[in-house]
Structures are given as structure tokens and as C-alpha cells.
Image 1 (cartoon, rainbow, N blue to C red):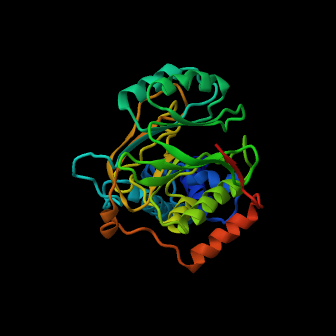
Image 2: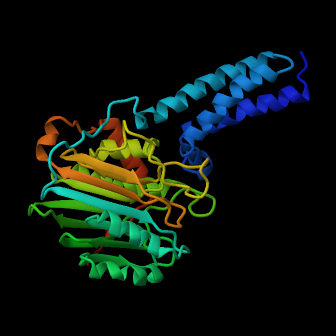
Image 3: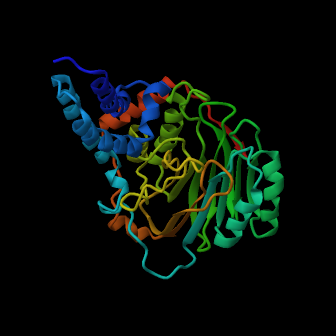
Amino acid sequence: MILTWWDCLLLLFVLMPVVATLLPLIKHDHWVFRIFDFPRLQIAIVSLISLPVSLWLALSHHHLFWFLVMVGTVCLVYQLIQIIAYTPLVRPEVAVYRGKEDLRTLSLLTSNVLTDNHNAHLLIEQIHQKQPDIVLTLESDDWWQEQLSILEHHGYTYTVQIPLDNLYGMHLYSRLELKDSEIRHWVTEDIPSIKSKLKLRSGEWIYIYCLHPMPPSPTESATATDRDAELLLVGREIEHMDEPVLVFGDLNDVAWSSTSKLFQKISGLLDPRKGRGLFNTFHAKYPPLRWPLDHIFHSHDFLMIDIQVLPDVGSDHFPVYGKFQYHPKATLIQQEPEADKQDINEAIEKIAKSDPIKDVVRKKY
């Protein structure tokens, strides 16, 4: 049976989401393979449309056509399985705190502001409205530092300021005491992160990590190697800690990617979005092309009070707000993810592949 040009066009329509599904399964770090980790919902939607439409409009049902339809159906199911954990169809990973907010309550706001965005007033208005204990900005340079300096006169007396013009500047503002703050460079000298101890109003200390690794893309990094290594280096450090931890920022990875899943297993941290929603934060300007790049992970001794994606502030990312309750007894009802030997070996291999800085640059702040 000869395929007409129309049937070939329909086959291509079915083939596109199949290719986009199969490429990330190839264990290669190049962005061509890893970029399709991001739009899993979009790939699933294209599959859901292409399969019935092609069956309906095909002029001839060639055996190749039926083969691709079957493969496309399998790929659709696979994509849905990948994202179903971030829907209300599954049980939430983090329980809701039902008690009264107290001295152990902690709130934070993280925002990739986009260096060229000069609508600082929109973000500052949100900060005044939500009154978070911690504010983290990413891609913030000297101009943004000048605009955000007003926060220091509104209770945010503890700061770590790293103004850069390379899209990896970072500013941390806190109402709560910071101690032993470090500016770290895990794999690249020009991409910083922050580690600090933070004192809750109850007097108890927790650790926070603020991250913004480089993404795999044709305009930034050709591979995901360094991004994966930074996340896993942080995960391995947290693995050996026995203190409460929060990790937040623009991780330039989606929560359902193999690396994010491995990070959770290695670190033992929980994701409050699981069982609740996708909480898409990027791209703010293109609604059909959105996925969750900005994250908040925490140890299993925190309960969730609130988590929200906030309105547009002129950036290509939406800000994220979260409020949590430090509650040590939560460890009895919340099971932390665990890594097996294979996971640990995979993490070690990924870290070694990036050739990380052997002595992590640690600058006391």
C-alpha cells in the first residue's frame, strides 16, 4: 500500500512526540537529548491530539501507520506517568500543618528576576504583601541590588549579596539571623550558590541552600553535566547531615527529570508540590510553554502551610512563595526518599564527569 503525501504528513505528526519521548531515554548529557525532559505535559498533549486526529484523517492505514500509533500510545502513557506525581491524583508527599503558626513557622519567596527586567517595584510590592522571612533573587546584578536595598530598611537586616552581570547574580535577604554564610562555587568559578545557617524565631537553627545552576541549552551550556553535578554535590552533602534543611532557587531542571529524582533520593529531601500540582514558573510570557523550574525542597521534619506561584513581575519566571512549619515529629509520618547502591554510584559517576572544583570555593560572608 502506497502512502500518500497526506498520510506521510500525519505520520510525521504522530512521530514528533514519539521522538521527543525517546530522546531523553538515551543516556547522553547533550542538550538535544536533555531538553525534552522539560515539556512532558506539552508532549503528552500533542500525543493526545495527534493520535485520534491521525486515525480519523488518514487516507490509508499503512502498517507503518499502525505501528507508530501503537508506539505513540505507549509514549503518551509514559509521559503521563512521569507527571502524574504532580497532580492531585496521587497522595501528597508533604502533609499539611493544621496547627497554629508559631515561632517555628518559616516563609520564603524566591524569584528569578531576569537581569534585563527593570520592574523591581512589582517584586517589591509582592514582598511587602506576602512578608516572607526570606527573599532570594536570581539573575540580580548591581542595578537590582540598588533597587532591593530598600528591603534592608524593612526588616531584612541579614543579607548575602552577589551582584553579577552574567545572569548568575544572587541576593539573599532575611529577617531571621543568618550565621556561617558561605558563597560557594561547586563546579564553575562564575556560578555561585549560597549555604547558610538560619535561626528560627524559636531559637533553633536550620540550614538553607540557594542554588541556580546553568541549564542545558543551545545558548548556555551544551550539556547538562555541570548542572547535574552541582545538584548532586549538594545532595551528597545533605545526605551526611542530620539537621533541618531547605533547598530553593531556580534549579534549571524540572521536578520529574531523572536528575531531580536522583537528587531527592540522595539528599532525602521532600517536594511539597507532589500530589498538589505542577506549579509552573517558566516561561511567564508563553503560557503554552510552561514548566516548573523554580523549586523548594525540604527535609522531612517540615510540614507545608502554603505554596504558591505568584503573579508576573516582568521576568520570564514567576516568583514562588512557600510557608512551612518546622515540626520534628513530622518525621514519624513523612518518609524521606532513600538512595540505593545503584543511585549512589550513578550520582558519583555524574559528579566525576563534570570535573568539579576539588576544593569548593567557600567565602565566608
